[in-house]
Length: 80
Image 1 (cartoon, rainbow, N blue to C red):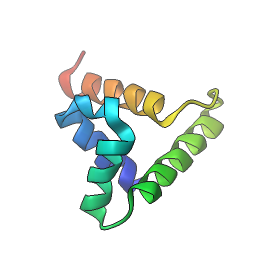
Image 2: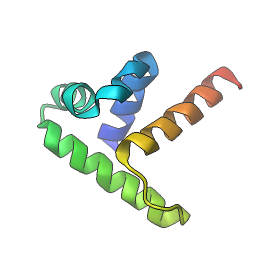
Image 3: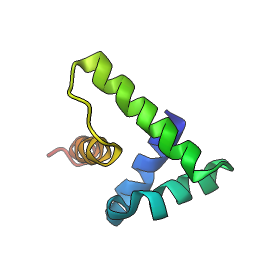
C-alpha cells in the first residue's frame, strides 16, 4: 500500500495525473521509491484487487479506484 498512498498524495496535489497514469503517475511514484513504473502499476493493481475482493465490489480499473479514493480523501480533508 506504500505505492498507493504515494499515488494518492501526488493526485491530491495534482489531480491531472489521473489522465496519465502510466506515463506520469506511475513514473513519479516509482522515482520516489527507487523502483520501476511497471512494479508500481502491478502493486496498485494488486491492492485494488484486494480491496474489491474484501468489500465485495466488482473489479474496477486502477484509474477508477484511484478516482474513488481521491474523491473520498478530498471529502475527508475538506469536510464535504
